[in-house]
Length: 347
Image (cartoon, rainbow, N blue to C red):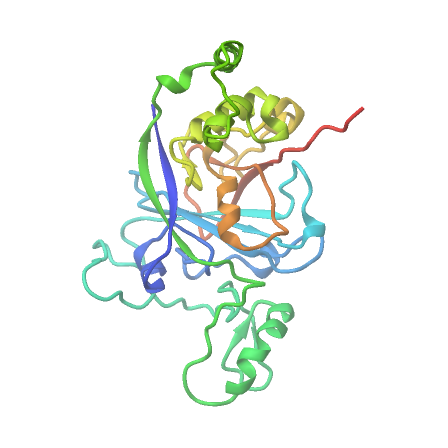
């Protein structure tokens, strides 16, 4: 069986990550696919604190049928630590958008990656200067720049103030409290191999005990952290069989931030019975066609180190989408299940 793995690469020129080139990316601003029916601000507003959610990632995932020639999945989240709960994705929003090959926004020909990147395909809707989402509000002074919310207008004002009312290009420096650092997600097919890694944990422990009994372990000072971790693990969850499997499956490609297998199964980081089992038993159906949803991809905890936000934490973000990827207009919400590692209380 093969899965696709996604790795983060810093782009030399962010223009290559515009909507013209149908990117997969982490952070930055969303590269919208359907350009007229953008998600309303209310859909990307946290239901708990009412703040605008931040764009986390998008994955370009087309497949071969009439209405999925172009297809992107978008993930947003509220960064407020008070809105984050273990085993709950209430602060996340996942959106699916798709277009046929012949559409009103993009050429039917594949964009060229030779030479300098071309500008983004312009959006007929106004976009927020701070986050890149639909912006129904204009600056009350110059009317030339737009925002999704008063929160983002206030945050952007120190940048905009020197240029407010002046001709010329607006300042476009990302606001770190709103926009995550931007990376391209480069996908690579990865065979799931068996072999040495299939040695079970009991065998590894027996191997160590045999070495220990024969006095061949020494003082362990010359044993690498990775080798030590092979026997002992480095987490309170190391006793969890699911966690050991997670580590084994990711060991050969530790920098992966996305695992994609449409119709497959997530690689959970800890026992689902203690975390998200009830959610998995009652996956809600697609709001577009009423059909069932299936797993499509997961965002790994390795992505957290790239986001530069110490308030964020998760074990696995598993995204489930309509199994038919049914025809839609604009954007439709899909499902995300967040699994966290929660240490058990000591008795």
